[in-house]
Length: 133
Image (cartoon, rainbow, N blue to C red; front, side):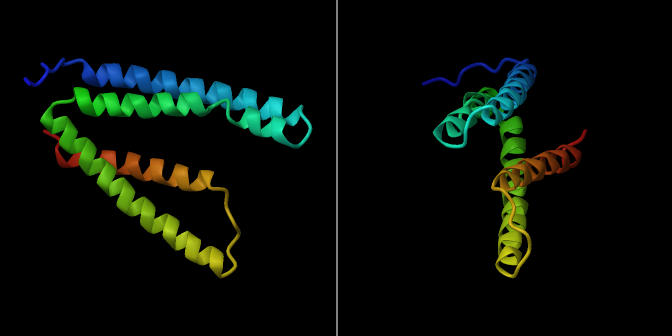
């Protein structure tokens, strides 16, 4: 089967999809937080907590689409940035997990997600600087 032809606007389409997903996430998260506070503790709060998940899945879908629409060079950059982000993020999360075992304050698992995303962003910056022309 022939490779699909690459559209040079794949980065712009990804940026639009990503921004839409993140804005949706932020809006839905704010709604969920305020709505959950208005409900008695229990299953209702958990259900409100599920509200932002479709936006998270949309962002994941956007990243997958980007990797499928990208040319070989862009795919290589994405793979390298993910590898750096995963390696550094794993070291940080595992290290803090160890510190937690020795009395450091427990953190929400959302911090692990934020750590991985920040490390991926730093990895993307490193890769873009490495391949800067």
